[in-house]
Length: 316
Image (tube, rainbow, N blue to C red; front, side, top):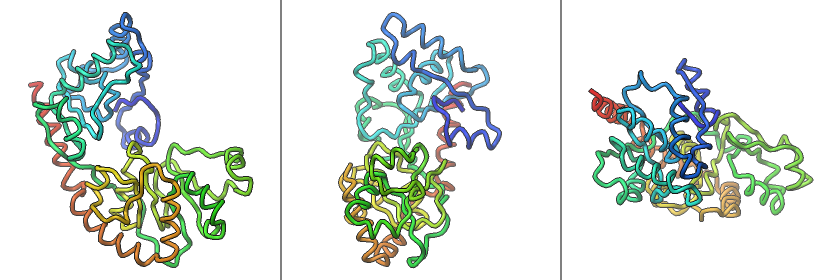
């Protein structure tokens, strides 16, 4: 497994004994036209290729790996979840933009994670062998928390801050969990609200939070949906930002959604939970059945593996 950053995913591969490597593509992505080819070749020398039957890339900005694999005759699978048409960073050099665009379009096959992603990329990736394999859940939350249990919520810091200022009595009854990549220091909390204590927040290396009562999901479409998917599969009540992708996954129930980027709307969802927790839990039970039927890894992982095997077979 090759990654451009350290983190929970690399830790998971390391735990099962898989070889991992961290590379830094910044010098290529920021290179001028004269240096781009040389920087790409230099990046390729950091990776061992001769034992690979195929290369799967999960991040469009790692399209450089598609280009390097193709140059070595290694078939590639582009696993694409982007829900907006792919475009290189306009501030990148012309050669970098050309290389990434050609690499995306030249993948041996494409795996879309949703109908929304497939529609978004229809013009660029039209004509490529493709399949749709939706995100699958990996429940890690435990059982849903009883309605009368002490309350713990996943919530963006902005929503928590609004609650603490406007409804301190409600906020005082909750503890709030922050997922990976969230580092909150006492100084930062003091700048937000001098009444906060660092113990009001639980920070974790992954998204597991035993005893979770409510998941106030990603505020923006660009944020990871896996925590929301896992919460839904477990039967934990949730509210997420409305988008074409979240509607495709979670359905059309209006009370599941809020406007993108609206921290106050997420805070109001917690207030609504306070008033009628049983309603939230009934809705979560129905959503759990939907998610478990459509996003079960026991059905989806074999489909993805079959697609990867088909790609690898192209090497002969």
